[in-house]
Length: 234
Image 1 (cartoon, rainbow, N blue to C red):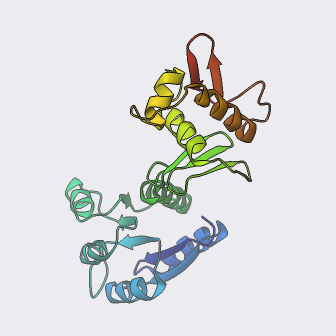
Image 2 (image 1 turned 30 degrees about the vertical axis):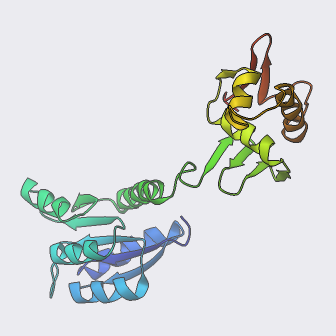
């Protein structure tokens, strides 16, 4: 989170400066505004990743600022207020604030809440491995979009059918497949060929992705049945 930009909006200059000092000690980059108009100007120019916003401010109050920010962005907004009534909390959160902190408060608590909100926001906004078309098992990363496989920092050069076998098995971890099932799935029911080709392809895959092909970590033989991709905890 070092370098993350936080906009602090509070008409109490001393309080805004204290929060700024605490956050900058943690590696954040801050900007302070002391009324609603400044807040909106700085929001557009500074482009923060999080806003700490006081409710009671001159020119434009915090509720309206929150509403305007939320119409433009989904970044976390933490509202500050000397009011502790339930209705104010409901109003603030109803306008899209992510957290509500009642004054007086510890600056350290605000910093902790800033970090928690940013972690949550980054987790929700970051695309998942599945959305990226990636499957990961320890050091093994399978990229279904680029048809590539990586072991640690090394690219494993799999042929198309080798990749398709690996991808299919990795999508069904710990499920046992016979050679016939793999052949039908990868080559097709109507394809003429020998199921022994599956054995050859499995051997080649192991040579390319396994540290010890004779003692495979990923593609394991289930004697008398077929093969399975071990999706265990790596």
